[in-house]
Image 1 (cartoon, rainbow, N blue to C red):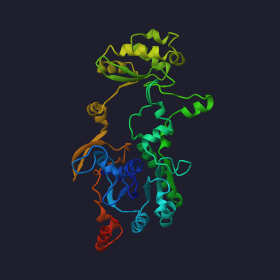
Image 2 (tube, one colour):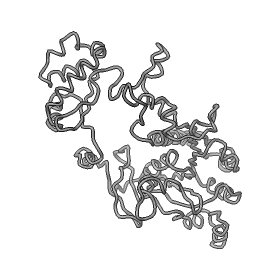
Image 3 (cartoon, rainbow, N blue to C red):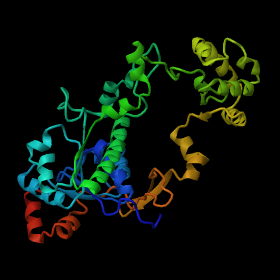
Image 4 (cartoon, helix red, strand yellow):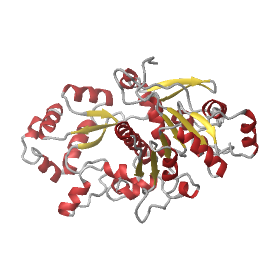
Length: 401
């Protein structure tokens, strides 16, 4: 691990969110030096602790990975006394991350305006299903619903099949957390200049929709409704997935006529690039199935590794469609150290995704895996807020912490 200063050292984050969308923002911030205090319901904890494959320590693997670097405390912010303690923490913090349904925090007396009164510089990330405004503002939201509502699910699947889940059920959560980190970092710059905090408002469907390239302007200009195309891409061909002789699949991306010419040469059929049926992108799109079949018939004559090596020589953009087993064996992942093994007092070293992006001088780092429920209560309540042991014991007895 790097011993260099981290870019967010000195920033304190209160993560009062649950599950994944909001907490992933604080995970990113914590990887780059922010002190993240994870606030959880006493005795119950974040539902993410019990989601997915369980570890011997009693928490899930996804908790150990995604709650990395965080300090865990318990606090019932629904309780008036707990809400008062939260405000004391806010007075010592820079950022609050939450993803309760719109209006929930306000009903407990700890909404943005309540916290701003305590700390005018506070930045609050608010991640909900549909954002703080609009007719659906108070509706519950999950990433699967966001994928559907944003238009992404409509595009996933075969043309004559039902809409499918686009890869990961939590994609929208991760995208929202990433945009949340971007938002609070921009808000921090404003605090530096003006001394005034603000809130960052994200509906989970919004970053998913933002990633759908030209779908909005294309519909606005011509009424074109993109539909499911299986592995294909709307504007270019061949740009799809193709079989190999040894029962693997590869991806090929020919985004221009120049790339198609390289592919035709690699296929040993350079004349295809001059054939008016295939020479231009528009012509190939008109003959999509025919072109895809030509490429698939060729890729099926070679084993995957031989095929990819051949395409690499021809400078054709291509790659293996990898399972997680392939990824663990892949030399590129190894060279970039995209997977790291981290252990701590609760777990033997386990493989988890590394921090990103890579900063050349101040890279992020992982100090420890997700903590036990309430593991840092004493450190935060005694050392940060100055509570004495008797007060803490009384709060424990009342289930406030």
